[in-house]
Image (cartoon, rainbow, N blue to C red; front, side, top):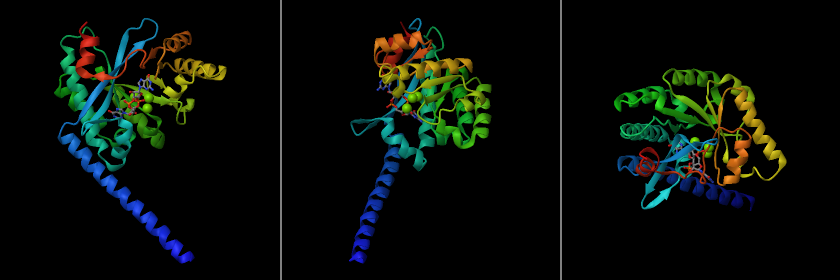
Length: 276
Ligand code: C2E
Ligand code: MG
Ligand code: MG
Ligand code: MG
């Protein structure tokens, strides 16, 4: 009986493994096809200064127009990260962002820095700096028009190498933000060591800001400490005016969120924010 049970268990798992590897294979094929058929596009979400509501930068966010359904990056980037497709996809994002910047440059009043999200694997891969340099040269734009956003997973596995890479980025004029701060290790110890310029407080803290006094103090303290280290602070996921007001009273520098501006396609962003 136990033997029979064991066999069933085995086939249960092997079926699931099979299904899983079929899924993974088809995702890989689908992502390849998506690149070939230009199914990816970028949306742009502005970052605003809280004190005067001026736009100080903008974040590029990838979208996948997959057979008429729009897939969000959370649904496919994890898979791309583990099957290697994240490398060519990231290179496409950089290229497209640089193309957009070059296109906007003609009319816009000032260079508004564009932030690109860089996945842990691509950050660690080694070609990031060269890819960035090649793209800015190709589109004749300034590297200082580009910033990158990385999460803690990008540098925690190998801090020393990460610091080297960060210096290379800073040397060509690319600023660095730590994204989703508060969700991972969130150690102030590494903040002291890393050559980064900006900290983005994760949505989860901003959304729960009103829940308790402790949440208020926590966010206020994160902002104070970040300032102590010379970092500017962005609050992500600001959905209401009173949250923006609260954050301003804590001296938070910048904010992003649906209340201020949702992610929108490149041409719409251009019309709405750059040629006014
Ligand atoms: P993220 O970099 O932390 O981006 C913020 C996410 O919050 C975006 O989701 C944005 O659309 C969403 N958001 C903005 N304002 C609000 C708000 O007021 N309320 C709420 N609830 N959400 C808001 P999105 O575009 O689905 O991206 C999810 C994540 O996927 C990003 O998180 C980033 O980690 C990753 N990602 C997006 N584009 C790229 C890319 O081109 N390359 C890489 N490697 N990762 C990307
Ligand atoms: Mg981001
Ligand atoms: Mg984030
Ligand atoms: Mg995120």
